Image (tube, rainbow, N blue to C red; front, side, top):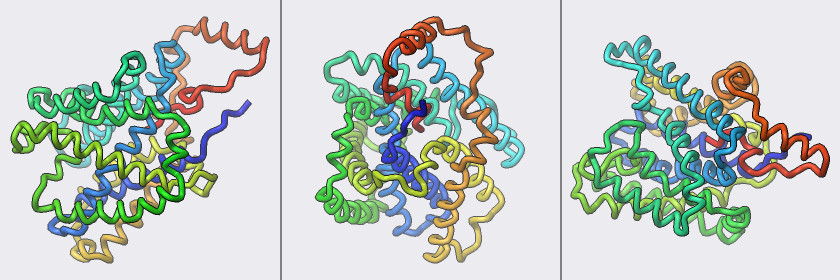
Length: 361
């Protein structure tokens, strides 16, 4: 019996990964362009939070059951190890960086998300157990901004500062997504997005872009200690509002890009090689690319490129690295066999959300 996927979430994941790729291609272009920097900040305020909320939503049924731990290892830990190694080779031999080292404790560029997802999912039973998970997660995130000593191990600043969005997703139900998709919310989201772009433009000379990356403490950004907790809470509210507006415009029906939602992890991890390779080759250097027409052209290329990386042929070729079966590495799950025997004797059980999705990156 085939497992049904919700078109809304596949659409949301695809559109979010497109925004991630577009944001990364804007980095070498924005330079002194205040308009592009403002757009960049507006996008960075919600594209990863939206991704992480969905990841939390599909982690609701995660527990320490062997089959789910196995899926966590093969779908998150193994791709992390492989792509952290692949990015090391890229830095060493393409970017000619002799200082590049393989370090599974120091994620580079895009692999931080896999590291964070692994940690978040392992802690899911804790968040499901405590009474006020979101306030606790926000408290942890605010304390993290006060602690420059945390360092780069496992990119722990990002893990902790993005944690509230994952915990929020854990607590969400289908009706919450239905609520934000109402016509009234969709209409209201238009001026909200416009205001976000205007605020992004206004903030360019007044605020460090680093706040939107959630990877540094207040001290590392050269700000007073008290600004860390304030910025965490302020950006959480702004990101949550923009994420709701983003979800309001995600189609709920099947579209031409719905099937691509199953390949967002591929698009996410692979587009980094393309963007970094193009930058290394000087493809972002021509002056005309730093003008409005050039910026639009590069944006269109980013959309097409990441779309191709999410397609079925790419997934088929690289499935060994993203979705390895690895039956040879695990002992037979006696509990799973018992559940299958029980299921065979009765009506089939509807798959839980975490079982319907392999990895929601």
